[in-house]
Amino acid sequence: MKRQKTHPTHQDPVCGMEVSYTTAADEFTLRGKTYYFCSGACREAFEVEPARYIRPHRQHGVGPS
Image 1 (cartoon, rainbow, N blue to C red):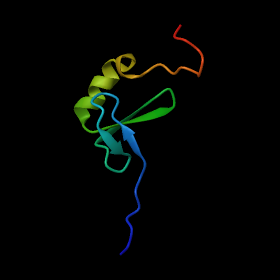
Image 2 (cartoon, one colour):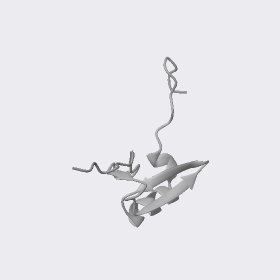
Image 3 (cartoon, rainbow, N blue to C red):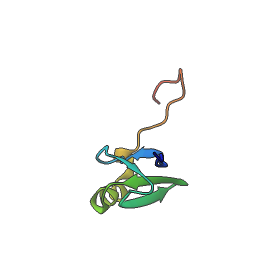
Image 4 (cartoon, rainbow, N blue to C red):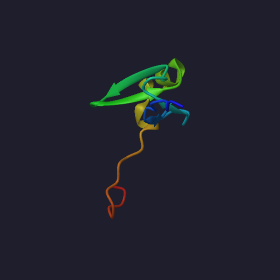
């Protein structure tokens, strides 16, 4: 039996669905990072208000500012 090659998955930042770059319905690049989406509607919601869906990055041991 031949194993299928799997692609890494990414979480749609709007709805949380797991998608890979090969199965994503849409994508959007913001500040050099590409986000993948399950639908155009999720991409549109993200594009209008990305700060609502992006979790702030926190380094270990550093509290929120």
